[in-house]
Length: 496
Image 1: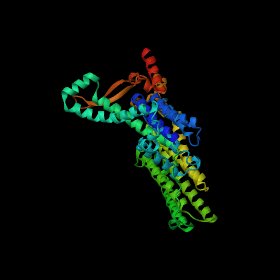
Image 2: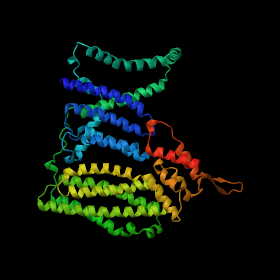
Image 3: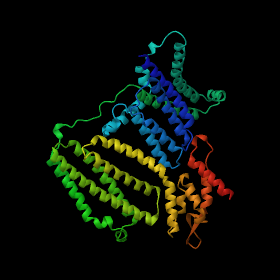
Image 4: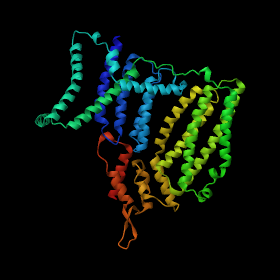
């Protein structure tokens, strides 16, 4: 009982520290080293009591993984990569909070979904369950310094929101009182509210997460038994999947020229944009439906050895046909790149197609081979691996190099788009500035007195990039290797 009580006090105290630390660190934007430092503090508050108690580390290996993705935020400057990295941090913490409730690699999709739901529920509940049920305040010794100190802290916690609410109302009610309070405490009411909200918000969700990660709470068994009333036999599944495969096969055969016609098909009436985008969204729609359909069919399927063999053959055919459509989409995206160059949208769309191919491969290697329990863990691992690979590839630098290489081949270069890339692309752009030359950025068209339009150009690409790379606030919280490198490059170019 005493261990549970002090664990509750630890969660509340650590949450308050994390709230204050988050207010100090996370206000610096764009995010950089501050995300890593705050995540490191959160992980430390989980690891310390576990080490002291000698608790099991099953599932807690996701804590170091969260630090890895938080470190990526201090490495790459791309806004989309930052979004992916922060999502990966939250996913790692969610899995780590409930990883002890079973072997992670054998969890199904429902297990990971329940982990996220329970982590979210604990974050929403915040410190309330800890303060009400976990901490036995009457068990604290009434002698010595513990009781008075805890009583004072509890009184401050109760008084803080009361002073905040009533003080704000009184200040708003009387200008003289507001002026006296402002001169006495030298504060900005809006700024104080902003700081208080962020501190309380971070402390609240941190308390819930720490309670889930450190408490001995087990999530319910996530497995869902198949109802006998809705089970499917070989005939039902064979007819359904057989007709689905026939539909896919007919589509591939009839649309073979459309799928693989390339430039000739585009010349027949479709633009490159229509050709590439239609293939991509067809792929997304097909795969988004095929994967859950096959998983549901496998879950409902009840049959002997021959029935499972039939299911495997039909599923393999479905996957093969979907892969054909994927190949078509990749070909279309390549045509789009050859015609107009590479952009972030086109790059990430291609990366998404490759990831979907991996999901289909996992489906074939696990579900069809009657190892369904491994599909979810392999899928989650592929998500983390994809984020790591994207950080290692440095998409913005790759996009800049690809477009500059097209220019060297005599194709058009959209110099303005280079200015939209993050500081991750700074070394690649700076390295080729001499080859780009004094290329000016197109701004707009302006009507002349004769009624004709003339093009108006802005500064050269080099001057625009120097101004962009130097326009960073000097805040240690936003320290980022790509931004530091871009500032150094800008200084060198300006000096030259």
